[in-house]
Length: 163
Image 1 (cartoon, rainbow, N blue to C red):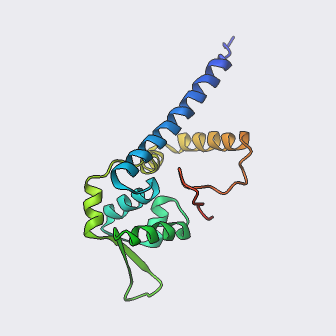
Image 2 (image 1 turned 120 degrees about the vertical axis):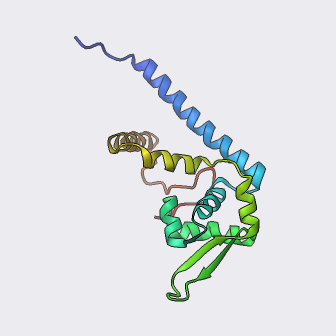
Image 3 (image 1 turned 135 degrees about the vertical axis):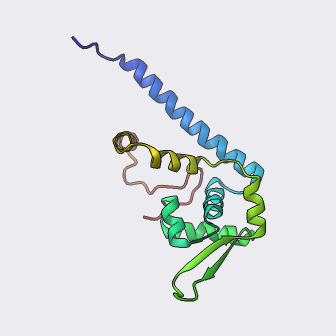
């Protein structure tokens, strides 16, 4: 006969794991803001741009798993701080490339890791089976909280990822 799992223990461990996730995201975001003055999402964008030297806005949105309109809002704020520079393609005026300025490159060199980037990297590396199980589990958390129809906000931000 198969022994039934201790439901109370599993619930407690699951809640503790959620606490750890929220704690990590909060801690990483606070550290990023304290060190760089940027939100976690802004710093994540800067780090993704730094990996590519120059990247199309549409490709940046794909790499960050965000809607292009959401990324444009992030870039507006980074450009206002003179950390990134946008330029239109000479061959196709609809295409916009973004690159770091010297100030942006300097900031990346001294900036901490970003939770969003760590999560994306980790999720991209795991097996399909694990990814599906995590997706299903997260969908169940969303359902438990009654948030299925809520627009997804960026982590620790009021900005919505427009879908």
